[in-house]
Image (cartoon, rainbow, N blue to C red):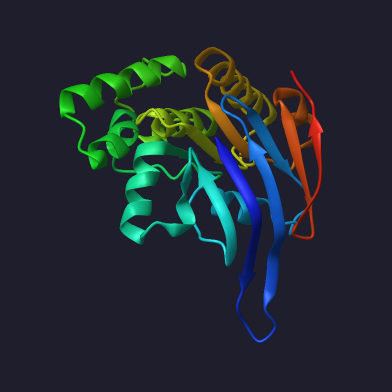
Length: 226
């Protein structure tokens, strides 16, 4: 599914910052993997390289046989839309759009027929427990509900991989539990591959493996299981 070979990310400046210093590992199809470590360890930087939000300074990122570091910017944009889904800490919903419109936006951008993407968006909102909230706007939804809208949006193009960057950081304990249990359901029932950045030690119980980063290096991999 994903193979990472000696990924290095250096941010330029008077004193260059090496955020990642040669990271290598693999993620298999259908795994739920957590990326953990202290603040500044390189967690989000790593996921940004894997998810094509950013490009590494050197190294290989191979997704389903494609070395995405060799794609042009236009090809990367198309690859993201077709193969990857994203869930962000801040939800990243468009305030002027309803829940349904927010969910189907990536499918619309991909050129999917409107009858198809509207139906799929409605089905996904029902899947995440928001079937009665299709026409509500973000300000009419709780934080946990907004994040579930974001999860439905991440799934709308049937991605091979969903990336979640601190998806529960802005949520209360109960809402965070609902979101994590939803990820587990998607992973187990739909065999959805998920790579999640988290700083919460308790989140280990939801995932298959933990990649522990320290100072831009992969310190160890923990097999957890749930």
